[in-house]
Image (tube, rainbow, N blue to C red):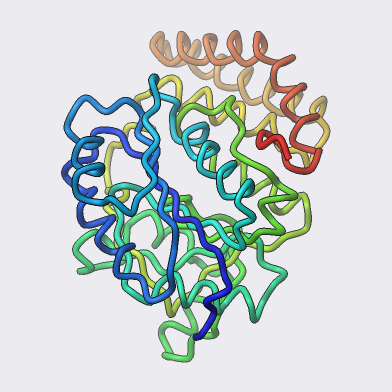
Length: 309
């Protein structure tokens, strides 16, 4: 595909990423379609920043003086892309790598299907020995109609609409970026991509998976995860529910209140004091942050949110 006129910004947010960053950046360096790469380092305590500067002179490196988190870190790169009139932004996790033609195929898929605002490739695990676990849970017939059937019968279409795909590897179109804007800083880590996808769909863009393009991602694993144990992640999920701008905040709050009341009742009946403490804290902090969520919802209904467009 001969598209020398395209301006594509690849954005990687790093934090203590020495174990992965070389493979990640090498894979982008080998892309069959030219990209301008921006690395935003979230104050790593290992040698990530020094290594990138020394070994990848073509990379635009930004050193943050604090840990901004995933969303706010990406927003620095997204603003640069907009200020430089980028046609596409390609987000890639530090613990992921791509094949040489991955970005080219994603761009081709978008050009043929411009109604899609976010397109992700097929996700393998890091060693490309099996499907990445979390990705395998979202390509089901309910969330991604037709995908599994066509995979089984080896008759893939160029692109499939999907309800959600995590931001380990996204191609975002210029139109989508200018309308939807950046990540909401209310989410420091986790759920920011869920919120972004909700906003993409609010503005009538589609979200897709391109099965002919591939990313290899360390990803999540079966069994107990950080999501099961981290209170801040649980609180993010409550915020995510309340922030869905497709629905009225009053209705979402009442639904959340009912759910919390049911969980409190259950915890008391079964004498699960730890669960009771967590649920009460979730309600307290979500209620305390309600005005912040209200303001964030208003911001997200405007075009170019969080990117000062």
